[in-house]
Image 1 (spheres, rainbow, N blue to C red):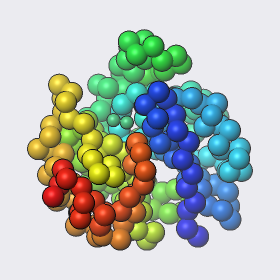
Image 2: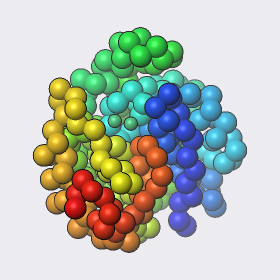
Image 3: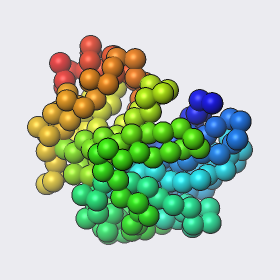
Length: 212
Ligand SMILES: [Zn+2]
Ligand SMILES: [Zn+2]
C-alpha cells in the first residue's frame, strides 16, 4: 500500500513538516516537526492517522524544534534520526529559539540515531538512509526505493541546495553528496524537501544551477 503524504508548513521558516501514512491502516509518521505543534496535530487529525514515530532529517530548529513536544503529546512515540553528528545542534535548540524569538522550542535527543546503511520503516514501507553532510554535519536523506520517493530535508531543493554559510557548513561536501549519492538514484525519484515545492531528481539534474 503506497504511503500518502501531506505537508504542514511550520515555524517562521515555513518548513515542510510532512505527514506520511498508509490509507488502509491509517498508521504513519511525522517528519521534521519543527514547531507549531498544534497545527501539526490538526493535520494529524485531518488525516485521521495514528502516528507511530517521528523522523528527523537534521538538527536545525525549524525541523527538530517541536519534536519533543510532539513526542510527549503523542504518548512518547520514538524519534528516529538524524545522524549523531547533529547532536551539538539539538543540544542547543532552546538557546536558538530564545535568540530567534520562537516560543516552545526544546532540546531533544532521538531514541535512535541513524547512519548510512540503516533502514527506517513507516507502517511497513522501508526507507534506506543516506548520510549527506554539508548543510549540517548530520543531515540524512530517507530513500524509499519501492515508491521512488525521497524525504530530502535541506540537502537539495527545487532549483537550489541547502545553505552552507554556517561555521560548520561544507559546500564541497554537500555538492559531493548530491552528485555521488542522490543523482545516481535515478531521474524518476520524487522528493519532498524541507522548504518550497517538491521536485524530482531528473528535474534537478537538468535544471538546478548548483549541480549543473
Ligand atoms: Zn536546515
Ligand atoms: Zn530547514
